[in-house]
Image (tube, rainbow, N blue to C red):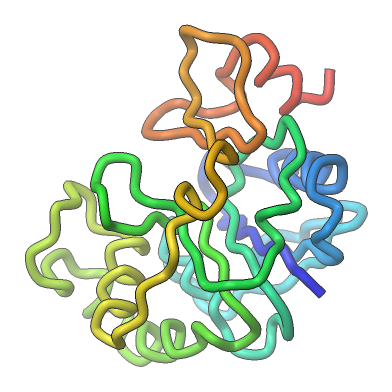
Length: 214
């Protein structure tokens, strides 16, 4: 049974609306995901979404490290950012196999915007990070990296490399599945990824319609 996992940390831009809209897109375009989990510190109540309480008060994107907690799933699992918009068939995301989106800016580096694994396969990421979060959240903890911003994906990429694990690249195994949002065109999809300051609530045209359900 495939599970989609997203993370909502309170105090930022995102709220339950983002969870509801992502879940709606998943049910419509990726029904192969039998479960949708949201790890959150908020009193979330979204139909069809299982709320799982965050155990730690890790700030901002660091809360995503809890997605790797052992025991959350027992089959294929996909970590998916809340600002992902589905506009067409996307069941391929629910297929088994360790895979990640390649970072938009850095070839050969993974992004945790979309990261897939099986069961407790990536449990050691959580265990290692939880043992010394202050260390891993500190810039430079992963040595020289090309990323301008030190975040969860830098740590995940580093720890997987250190363990000899190299996820397959989603763009390679599923060509044409991912599409990066570009306001200069209308047609996008089937899985629309937002980079930097661009977000679905500020998108236009068909992408905004797909996200808002208009």
